[in-house]
Amino acid sequence: MGDKYLMKTYGRLQMALVRGSGARVWDADGREYLDFVGGLAVNSLGHCHPAVARAIAGQAETLMHVSNLYYIEPQVKLAQILVENSCGDRVFFCNSGAEANEAAIKLARKYAKVNGSPDKYEIITALKSFHGRTLATITATGQAKYQQGFEPLPPGFKYVPFNDLNALKAAVGPNTCAVMLEPVQGEGGVNAADPGYLQGVRKLCSEKGLLLIFDEVQCGLGRTGKLLAHQHYGVDPDIFTLAKALGGGFPIGAAVAREEAAGAFVPGDHASTFGGNPLACAAGLAAMDQLINRGVVENASRVGEYFKGRLQDMASRYPFAREVRGLGLMLGLELAVDGREIVARCQDNGLLINCVNNNVLRFLPPLIITENDVDSAAGVLDKVMGEVSAKLPGRNEIA
Ligand SMILES: *Cc1c(COP(=O)(O)O)cnc(C)c1O
Image (cartoon, rainbow, N blue to C red; front, side, top):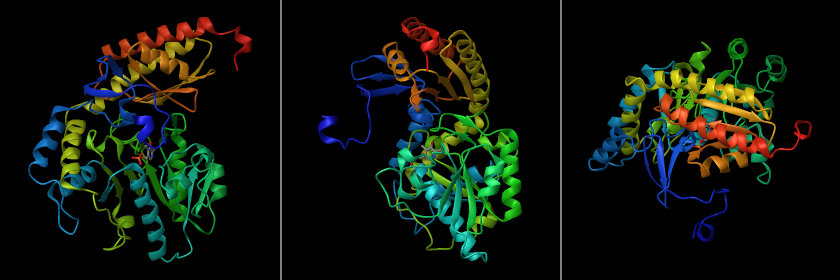
């Protein structure tokens, strides 16, 4: 029925998940899986976290939606939490990562307009980045495969290689208003910024009067073992964006800005009908309470280190494994072979993982997993890698 009634926008695996609890999910046939996809970094608290489920149920019986014509209590409280735990001062709420980045792009352009640079509109982004699927955000995304077929693209974006400060310096021109980067690229293959890079980018932006935007939609909210990935680098952006894990599984996104940048938006400049509605924000409040006050981020850091060690051990034993990358529980294992067979075999063995660019196994498990869960996952992966290795032709034939 799915193939008959849905638009064919996804290459779906032959499976329907119908139930989840903690780091585990069950398919329609009752089979259990350890979930190291985690809704692609959404299910950071695991599935159906009781505190989040209770908050949603309670708010659903109290007030689900009112317009942003009025103040919305849970929205203001969630904004307070984001501000008190970051370098940001003000929050705009929306419903997804792409929308959060749209808000950041519009804010950066408006900031230039009202600060004496009406002809600055260009935003420099990185190759291998990913910023969403709307027209502006596929254009911000430095990967042609997301753009092809949708031309003409909106003007005003320029791309530079990630982790190359000189290339960025050279790309800044008279029309540049901002730089937008993921501190750890997700869809591009789990590529973390070099420590000195983000510091250099910050300095450059400050010198040239450019806004620095960090897309933390995937790497933010504890995923890398700190609440925000840029906190590893000691670098504060002017704007950062959030979504995925923000609602504990419920859709919500946010653009967070420092006062100076946020001031460019005045009433009427930007809006979202559903953005910041009571239900989504109640979910966000419960999720952020768990994430910030219950040791979840610390767990991600500790268990992430342990998992990385297990992956490095495997990478050293299988010649077709190239490199382990990432921070906290945002980890990638680059292979010299197609990773999709490994994904399928892991699924057959009760482990859900994901693969980006066809050759980087990506792991985004719930941040609440234990070392035992890692042992289970690593055991399956090791077995599957062994099977794949036994099947491979001689070493010199590996690409
Ligand atoms: C997932 C993602 C987005 C897009 O989020 P949606 O909620 O799918 O619109 C944007 N940026 C990054 C870094 C992402 O990983």
